[in-house]
Image 1: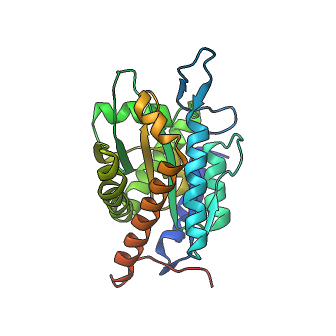
Image 2: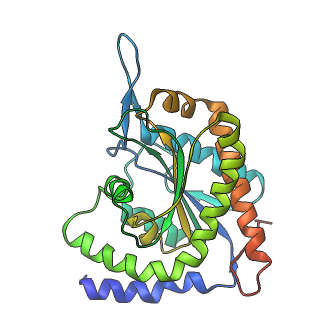
Length: 259
């Protein structure tokens, strides 16, 4: 398929954002399978790897379960430790007719002591620090695929920013007032980012960076089932607050629960 044909088909398939009612939430655990994501080692005599893909999956499943318990229609891009390419994640969004896309990731930094959580939405920017995160999360892409995806980013940004940014603000605000406050975790803010997984999904969506696996205190906390439950609960409340806000605005996208 040619580059221009791909973009043309993309434009025709964008009708999902124009629907009056939204029905489905897709939760995307970052990486998986051959893609480990960020990796740290336990501080033991025989150290074992701590991998982003595992923590992201565990938290994503908790978000999924909580939304299911509230009778939302919800799916996971992966429920096991398997490799899922960026195009495959986008295909799942199309197949499930997802209306919101929540991607869960774990941060890392070569600088010692980096801490905090941050929330990204799809948009253009010129921040050098943010580009480092983009390079990490877009690592699967190369060659012609990058060219196509860069065009898709430009097309999607204008269509999603007005919904993705409020979604990011709602989730981040809830994280800040709950787990952030309880555990004394630094809020690194809400930021724009050119993430291909968000662009290819063609839905209002956010990318969550839960914390830094490269910092001992943070990775120990993120591995705690209690923290994962509390983080997931805050994300779900943030999603619901966003839905309520959209519901109160005429002509805005509304998400209904399953019956």
